[in-house]
Amino acid sequence: SISVQLDSPLHKVSPMLYGLMTEEINFSYDGGLYAEKIRNRTFSGRWHSQPAHWFLFEQGNSSGTMEIDDTTGPSEALPSSLLINAVKADSANSIGVYNEGYWGMAVHPDTTYRASFYAKTDQSNMGTVSVELVSNDTGKVLASTKSSAISADWKKYDVTLQTGKIKPGAQNHLRLTVAHSGKVWLSLVSLFPPTYKNRENGNRLDLMEKMHAMNPTFLRLPGGNYLEGDEIQDRFDWKTTIGPLVDRPTHPSPWRYQSSDGMGLLEFLEWTEDLNIEPVLAVYAGYSLKGAHINAGPFLNPFVQDALDEIEFATGGPDTKWGAKRAELGHPKPFPLHYVEIGNEDWFDRSGSYEARFAQFDKAIKAKYPGLKTIATMPLKKTKPDMQDDHYYLRAVESYKHASQYDSADRNGPKIFIGEWATREGSPTPNLNAALGDAALMTGFERNSDLILMTSYAPLFVNVNPGGMQWESDLIGYDAMSSYGSPSYYAQVLFAKYLGDTVPTSTATNLPERFFYSVTNASTKGKIYLKLVNGSSMPQAINVRIDGGKALKSEGVVETLGGTNPTETNTVTEPERIIPVKAALQNIKSTFEHTVPAYSIQILELSTN
Ligand code: AHR
Image (cartoon, rainbow, N blue to C red; front, side, top):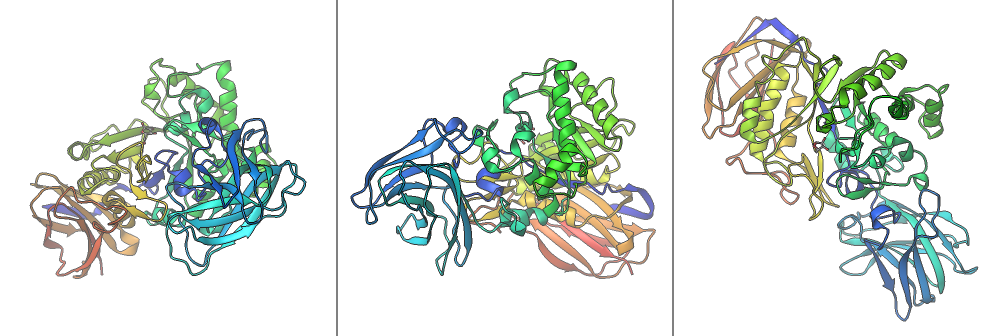
């Protein structure tokens, strides 16, 4: 049985309990959230030697070649390009290249696409470049347009492509062709569909909507390992990720592919703005994944300065250097910021340099921004940070054990941020078993939300195509065309949707094995949310007693997320196998019996008169 005493509040629920964490992993941005459809658009980094994802197109009697040219590019940041050497081409026999996208290119009817590219030619009369969206299956042109005439110097060309009454699909490509012999160099070829809130260089609609439905309160950015990079020069060097795309050199992500850096620091911040949440900014703290680090002291100072500049870029007014830069880039309004995380998982730094590195960053940040709270990425011996980031990747049985881990934790230490957590069962996205483990953990987060102020699941995204995944069990899966939430995703949607502002006193006796609960009270709304998790194979009948508040209405609401088999899951082809189902609850009294089905998570919303 579970007994709740509403007039005996234990503590407030942290207002930032549920948030988001992402990084460039599993094609989360490129080939994921970042709506760009062209893969390998700048021929940078490890793509250098071969024009990967690009193919030669020769119509009729045309002939020619394509190759990477490292001697010319549109900017210092992008020194390479794709050279089309049109040996033979004319208006009836065009030649060019096409890009296959990220496992296809989704195209919808009656939609406007924005395309652009940088180009130059060695011919005075090369003429225009034809830009076409083409079906892979039929070769049919779905939308087409022409640029203005290509000039001898590097220049940007912008066009729009309008589809008509076509069938939506992802088996398409973008083709660029010329109808004249000679040489044409291309770089930064880009194609955008409509984006969330119509942001230029913006995000995919469906994935933003999925995040919005999670009711998050913050975004931890930009990583994860992605913050640190394999080597120091591969870190998220934020100053190289802002400004015009043509000035962003791109960089290798530790997850084994080149990041386009289209998702730069300003785009991250705008993403938080679009979801009406706040950033939790993780700053590079002088340690990279393969072990290279900079000890505290003068050599660390430039990195500390970079972090201070980064905070100023996010929060500074127009009178500050980096605040003015942000305004110049189109965002005069400062972003809200309360938490700065110093590094990521620095327990991997076997040299033991973190404590001193943390102290150097912490001192400088607090001196300039006394209102900011700092987060350490591991327990510290000499310093007490405002918050400590704990990470958990568990199997379901381990999650059941960890659900009560914080119930007796020290309340005198730093506050806790669970900046990465997940029950890992199922691939590429977690199954119902994982969702049950996650729900058990979340009951612990809520019960202990005086100590645990923030939590964010990781990783959030995975492109489910072969080769898209570097890390198994990711909350939201997608391909070029569509996306779906895993059962774990829906567990989080429910937990964040039904969250009160206070944790009342409650006691539980004789709860069955693998049974977990939490209760929160939203007294101003007259709602009590009782979360029940049954990870066992049997339905479980529970006696519930609610005392110390106004009388309960006899009708309530129950949302159930469950299934018959814990390995059941959602997929890109069966996205809604396990989703929440809402029903009315009858005969609620101050004492009532309720049966939770096997393998189920239930949220009971009880209302007071
Ligand atoms: O979430 C995947 C990885 O797990 C993160 O990049 C890293 O911080 C952790 O080890």
